[in-house]
Length: 204
Image 1 (tube, helix red, strand yellow):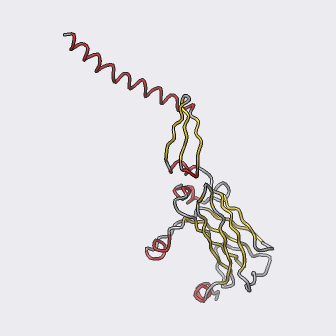
Image 2 (cartoon, rainbow, N blue to C red; image 1 turned 90 degrees about the vertical axis):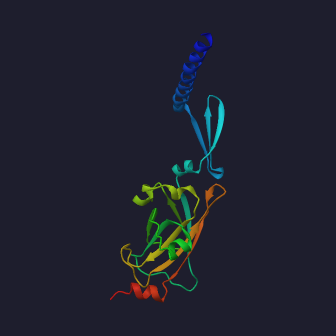
Image 3 (cartoon, helix red, strand yellow; image 1 turned 135 degrees about the horizontal axis):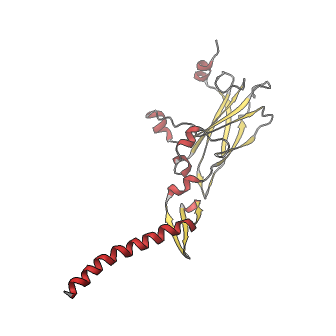
């Protein structure tokens, strides 16, 4: 009889204890202090004086992305004349040659920037997810993780209209990798379109 009573008490006591511990943990989340450590992909949580490190790359997705693109002109190439010319930069996730060319995988643009009337090259352009984010970049955050590099395509458009393509436009691209806790500078050398590019964009 005594053994039965003790067993019954233990059975009831254990779930009640677990519920109490769970409630204390959930209740303490409001006072959690989080510090992101980007270069180690860890998050440190301080709970009641105890420090807990959690390895979770997804946590870094909430941070802002700030890129620096150094845009220069290939020697011997002339910048399109006129006061309407504008520099366009488009950022996409770099999926590699196999995915983009062979499997025809085209990542959406996650950031874009337009700068009108750049008078001097080389020039450094700052691209930020705070001010230059696209709707596609808002829809998903995996590109912010740093697992893959970011491809920055640039174009000096002669008429300054993004929707148009002209044979006289200059084009170039560069990549930025996430290393040592930050996005590396991307160097972009602008040059003229190739024969195929000029043929496709030729205005009739």
